[in-house]
Image (tube, rainbow, N blue to C red):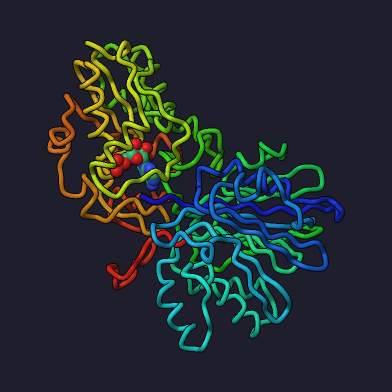
Length: 466
Ligand code: AMP
């Protein structure tokens, strides 16, 4: 399973202020969005400098060493990639020269038609240094710029060619430019702190540098940020709904973030409440699969009156990337990740809350661990509806045939997992919990209906190149 990326951009009106420090801390706050590589580009009024590396933000920047990246404007990126593509060439920001100077780009999202676009560019003689779709965007922008001599016009024109999700921060010489795709699949927020403008995938990046959340970047909005902020709109068909990713609320974003005006923590508490309404059960204790399901489990416990408790302790030093190639190793990895507290579990009937089931590996392994620890009954409650179809916009969960709910009904899944009862949240309730109309959410992985065209050749399509 792959995660998505995190981006930050910042501009200080004080030309002698070094903004890279804020970008570094912002990336630190977004570490959950990608742990494979990190990078920062900054412009000091004369030149653009970039540093990128493989690994966690604190390792890449050696615990906050941002020497050489001085500048009052910059962008940053954390990335998660698929196995095999975890290479320095694919880390971001991606940098390039063009007619008017230098451009750096950091992208969160997935461009579905990037292979066709890349092929066209290669046929024109353009050379690629990475296998990312972000480089495709960069080539398209510089090509367009050579015709229009106007970066905002170029962004508008290029966006007409892109199918998929993209939240972008661009450093175009010493201007910060920000783009959110016209249907707003990926989050992107705008913040402010005395003379500093900051944009980030999640508002937690503002909290860490003492900036205030101002608003979300609107779907289809382009911001040009220098001594003033100018806003432009990507032309789109009137009435096109938005398509915010539901999985950000269910699993991906930090609970202390605000996404499109919704506090993720409240959404997850509601998820627990609605799970209890839809799937009540008599049990001794409500327990989360830590950490991602803690808030939903609290919601379930409060709504049901069943006490909340901990039965599994997570090893915090194992990241989300801890994925093993064989099933046996995957099961061991669950044991390394989660350890049961036998005294809290023995002879108990538990409501076990998790945020999602993708392949079913985690639930199956946990059930084994819990049974071995003496649990009497396991009532599994899942904070999302069944995931039946892949994501083409950056959360590469699994292929369709790997998804346990793609061809199994709930009762079959219950038997496969070996639990006493199983309840998934309904789509209707999920939409209520998020508080955004269903028409304005991307529910593609739950329904198989996607908010954009899909590529003709899905087999050729490889996900998560952000
Ligand atoms: P699985 O074991 O394949 O059923 O995956 C489900 C578990 O992985 C749940 O406990 C989730 O918290 C977690 N999860 C869900 N989506 C992702 C993702 N995109 N990347 C990493 N972990 C995930």
